[in-house]
Each structure stands twice: as structure tokens, then as C-alpha cells.
Image 1 (spheres, each protein chain N blue to C red):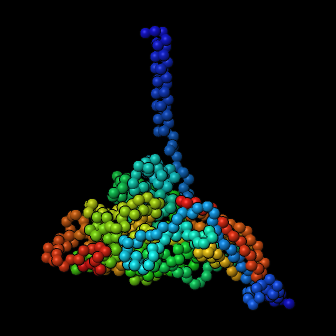
Image 2 (image 1 turned 90 degrees about the horizontal axis):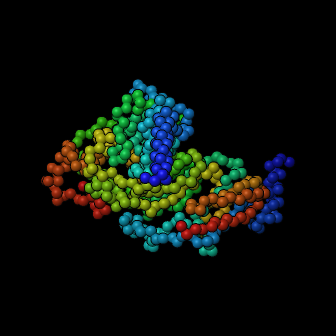
Length: 300
Length: 239
């Protein structure tokens, strides 16, 4: 080895050592400093009430910085570092438009609605269930999420949708629900078989102009906002704000709404009382069943 | 002599001198009229394919054209909202409702101005369901289904905003609610003409808004019963 090459090797080696040292130093500063920092919320503080728990925004802020900032971003606008890789996009808390509500379309959800969303997560999205956090922590997060929009300081949550007792699951109920699926034109987006492939499906965008798919009922047991018949009732009655899914609360009567719930269950590829009633009916009356879609006036 | 009587006399004198013979000018009723035109190349209006909704398609003998930049003869711009954006002293909302129709899978009118807080009634005159989805940002965003034959939706907007309206079921349906803090507004017709009537004498800022090209403003001072003409020219881009 020549003297020159030895010298080069020493220089390279020491610079490598130096940069490694700098890196570890930087990594350490990340752990100890309050970086990544959060933007300034619209409301100085908020509280939340879920059951007998009271949530505090200041406590929720620490949790947000640890668990939520990656997707929902330091400014709460859904533009976190991971957001560009995610579809559907993380919620923008600054506009206070929420998908899963027990309240009318256009109104703020209840604290319980937000708590349920955090607890449940969102099926078919990157939002996981945060059930591993304690109930107090999730309540604190609700309080902090509310600081991102001034609407929370000015407006009250809308009145909670009253869901009457479920009507009996009968074939008459399923068949009437099927007529409503035709009449209300659910099939235009969700498709005649509920596969999310209706004639308007390909053109749908959310309120931020991102493409969005209508729910495909054959994909599983869970819906975006829960998995019970009550949840299903609530979803189409209050609508999914920020998406093409409208509210039907003004145009479907409560009894009819249960019929629609019972029919929607038959679109799922899972065993249910509704599905078995429908299968038995199809076996006996196949010839009488009109197809759902543009050619069927009224369905059956 | 009371001040009111004095004003009436002044107005009468003005009408006698400057007004058109035979047309009475209401007390304090100044008028700002004009025309909105474009320079440059606007995008071509395209025919809308409504074949996916036959009940609507058959209502139109000739295809409905897109309306985002609607033009008329002599470079006229249609559907431009011209309104008083500053200087209007009467900011109370009128008691009568404004009406918006979904007919033939079109919004009629394409652009609907209204006063903040004014009652807004939305009708579905079609044989098909629509979902009415105004994409408000300042006001609350809501989205309601309105099947054929359902009663009108009665609502209002409390804050001034240009709100795009769409129907997700029929993606070509596209319109605007223009919520203003004035009742002095006018939407240009196919000839680009507008007219703001019944203005008290004073200094006003007149703004013209086109959905794709934004806003332009001019300051105008009108005397009692005076008529003034101003024009707006938008630079049209083909995209």
C-alpha cells in the first residue's frame, strides 16, 4: 500500500466514523426533544364526555403526537407523512366533517361517535382499531381532535338519530327492503347485487375530489361505521359525510328503514336469518323475481 | 319642508332631466347595468351524454351542453354573478324563498344567488332519484337523497360562500349556490348583460364572479335615480 492510498483510507474511515457519530447524535435528539412539533389548533382547548369519562385535550395532544400524527399530520389536516401512500385519505379534522355520525348530515358528531370511530377503526382503510389504548386515553384523543376546528367551539353536536326497536325479520320485510333498494336507487352506486359496481360507481369522488368506491356488501361482515343492524340503519339514515353517500333520514320512514336493513343483509356473503329467508324464497319463487336495475320498475 | 319631501323633489327633478321620458324612476332607485365579456379562448362547451339516465335524456331534444364557461354572441359570458360586495346598507335577508330545481338531470338555474340566511327550497322534478350534495366549506357540508316525488328540501346558508353543488349519482350535474351578504345581485344572461336595480345613492363596490375565472371588482358611485353602465372582461383560458 502506498503512502497516498493509506492516507485516503484513513481520511475516509474517520469521516465515516464522524458521520455515524453525527447520526446517532441526531437520532437521540429526536427522542428527547418535542419534535415532531404540532401546528396551532383552532381552539385552545376542548373537553369530551364519553359515558362517565371526561377527556382532556392536553392529555390527548401527547397521544396524538405519538399515535396519530403520522397520518393525520402535525396540523390535523390529514396530510401526515404517510398520507400520500394511503387511500382512502386520512380524515382532515380542520373541516370537522365526519363519516360516522349518529347526528344529521351536516352537523357535528357526538363525542361518543368520535370515540366509537377511534375504538372501531375503519374497515377497508388504514385506520386501525385503537382499542389497545385505555378508555380514558381514547376519550382524551376525542377532546384533542376537537381542537382542530373552530366549529366545535361555535356549534353543538346535532340531535342523535332515534332508532326504533327492530321490526321482526320476515321474508315480507326483506322483499319490501328489496323494493326500496330499487326505488331509492341504491343500486346506481352499490350495484344491483350490492357489489359496489353500479352505473355511477366509476365516477364517484369524495368531497376533496379523490376517487372513492361505494361499499361492496359482499366483502365481509363489517361496515365502515359498525357491524350491527343498528349500525347499518344509522349509516344510511345519517349518510356518510364528505362522501357521495347521502342521508336518507328525510325520505325513508323508520319501519321501511328496517326493511332495507333486512334486505341489505342478504347481499352479504355470510349466514344470517335474512340471508336464509331470502335463499328459501329464491328457491321457491325464482321465476317471479324481477332483476334490480334500470329495467325493473319497482323491483320485487 | 321635510327632508323626505325634499328628496322626492330632487329625484323628480333628476328623473325629469336625465331619466328616459315616460319611465318613472323610483325614489333613490339608482341602476348599475353592463355587460360581461371575455377575451382569449374559452373552453368549448361539450354535449352531455345522459344515456345512463333515459328518463332525463328523453327530456332534451338536443343534448344539454356543459355550463362551466357558457358563452354567447360577441364574446358574452353567461352565468356570471354580478353583485354589490361593499356599500350595501340593507343587509337583511328577504323573507321570500329562492327556488332551485333538479329537472332533466340539470340544475335550474345553473347558478343560484341568494342572501345569507334566506330560505332556499330545493325541488326534484325528475322521475329519478338525485342526491343533492353542496360542497360547502365555510358553511356545513351536507348530502341528502331526494328520490322522485319527495317534498322539497327547505334549508338556508348563514355565511357568504360560493358553494359548488353536485349530484354524485349523475356526475354531469353541476351548479352553484352563491350565498351573498346583499340582495342586489344579477346573473348574466346569454348576452352577458346584468342589471342591479333599486340602489340607494352611494358608493358601491360591484363584483363579478365566474365559477372558473374567479372575481373582479370595480368601485362605482351613483346618485339618486342615476343609471351607470360598467363592464367586466374576463381573460378566458381554454382549460
